[in-house]
Image (cartoon, rainbow, N blue to C red; front, top):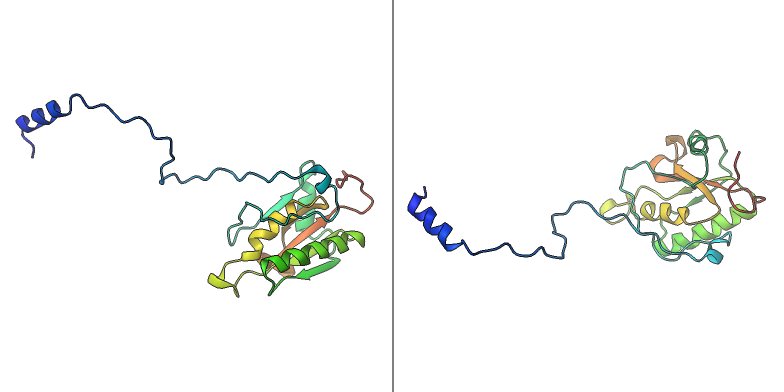
Length: 185
């Protein structure tokens, strides 16, 4: 225990001390991350049916998360219909065994071809990452970002268990005849 004389001596020693000014750095203990900043994309790039960025999307998808995307301006009913299998799967791409760069090239070619052929619903099988280092879903974390940046993708969601579950995504493409890419029902 500290006696009263020692406490008085301490208070006297620190009486002229003032707090340090606040540092202009965030403490390492901060648990929240700022939201990712979407890359700026030129309008003329976005207008191309096959546009897909060659850089990685800054967003990450946590393993096990059931994820989805719906283009702004569309009804949530569209996403519910996609989840329930309203549109039949007209084509699929299996990306098992591809590197990130190979998968990006294959995805671009597949979506461009599907759009040209007038397909509305396609499946992309990205796998669950069980064969990759640390068994992490490397492609799953990128597929969502790549798809959300394409103007011909209206929506996507994790596939139903019978269609691939957490290892696949169902993609709803705009119809070929839709000039601006978004058609409202």
